[in-house]
Length: 236
Image (cartoon, rainbow, N blue to C red):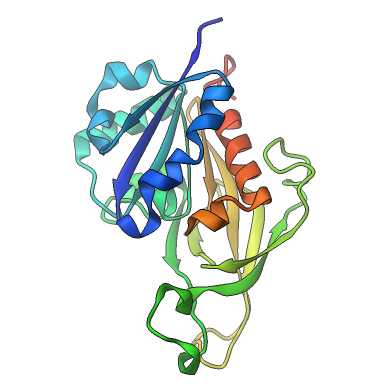
């Protein structure tokens, strides 16, 4: 059996520590039998031959930009069976100006609600709210999240705009608070998969900082998601 190949693509906004964050998962990929290549930009996406030989793309690129050629290469690879996964802004807040990228991923970061204004100090912690990530009925039987119980975090809680072609494995609910303009609780997908052509996409929205990525449930979901998204013989 040929060795599986993983491509880790990182960059974009430094606030998400793309190098340190991806370094957390390189040992797992290597232990799991992947030959790992790391790239510091999305230029590799335009290399059709490289992506055709890649079984899994792990992306950690927050915001930034992608060229039409790079996006076309990534999309074609996923349609042909290359897996695509990532966490937090590295996949759900990438390439905001590209509607085709949003179509590929199926969900887009909109905001992360903050604390009461009088409690804010001007730092990142202004947006760290206690919240629960709840596993859905589908998630309780899915290989990525089976056996994981609902878990609590104090970090950014992503509000996500999404379509109906995603399979939601976990959700999180934004409550109504006096300083926010919405009038009823809003539930967002927190972990989801998407079948795209012969490829599999997995998005995990928790992961703002290294301590969140090291949370046992978050780390387990990301690692299982890498394996599940990897190119399969059946492509389904």
